[in-house]
Image (cartoon, rainbow, N blue to C red; front, side, top):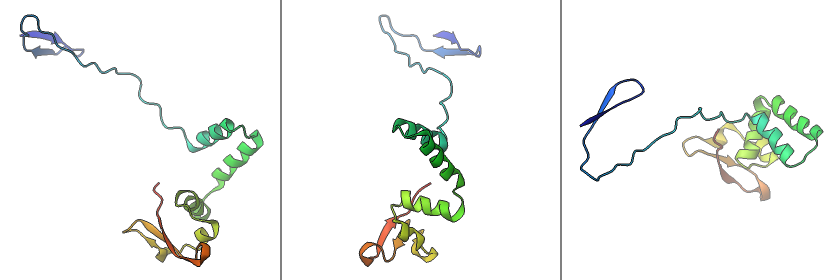
Length: 122
């Protein structure tokens, strides 16, 4: 039996190895903590710059995002995450949302047809 002293100065015992045997130690590098996920506005700025939009367009997009609150924010979430059309999102009622099945029933959509849509996840 041999001993190794860890960084905390606590001896660790390990069994002796037979002659000619070797062992592979797994080493985990400890580096800086993972960088936090970029904020939404930073991601929007990066995406608009990657697509070579003008600075004025970038400022307009950021302003729209900052101003979204309440009903307008909910409609934007339904438009982009659930894939609803504008008029469908405007017509969603509370009784059309089924939390047990995690879906929204869209009434009178395109072609005046009803269809279920998956609810968006935050």
